[in-house]
Length: 207
Image 1 (cartoon, rainbow, N blue to C red):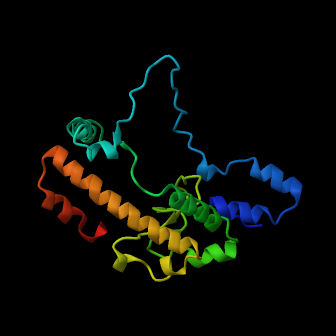
Image 2 (image 1 turned 120 degrees about the vertical axis):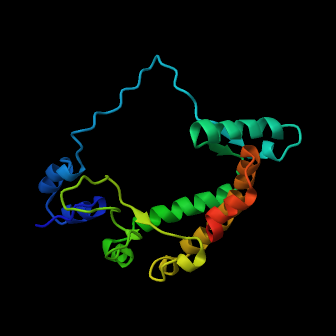
Image 3 (image 1 turned 135 degrees about the horizontal axis):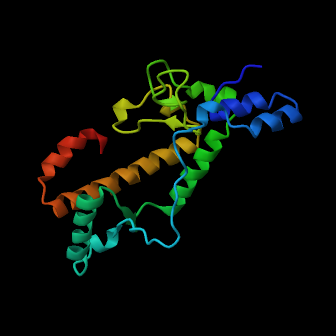
């Protein structure tokens, strides 16, 4: 029996064997996924770790809190390079629809998922990205990479073929994320005292 070494391919191949073989193989991690050069992180329970900056989007729109929140945003961009956003305005029900759709999409039969397989020389679709040789270490993940914006960069064999209603929910989600991204980028520009045109040129139609 040949086994395709991907998270989903491995499972699909093992399912065709009897239970005893399945159990013994499934409990053994393939060597391509084992990283002997990396030790598990040791986190002290007594050490206080720094907390990721949290930015409240509603406060950025508030006259009373905007200046303070802009200072926090400036510090996060300058000292951290990332931050967490609360009250982002994206519909919670839409987020749940997308999460459900993604789970159902990843649970599709292997034959259906193969329709979205990565093509030679491309990282979009199902598969492992940036695999350059057969012996390199792989991430233990079932990945589906997809470019959604700008519209003209969408691959016709991928996004238009996503099952409904998942595709419609995904489309609405992109629209809300785009609106959110424009808002937060405007505040980043303001907090860092940048030229707004520089940010727009950087992302162009990606927003």
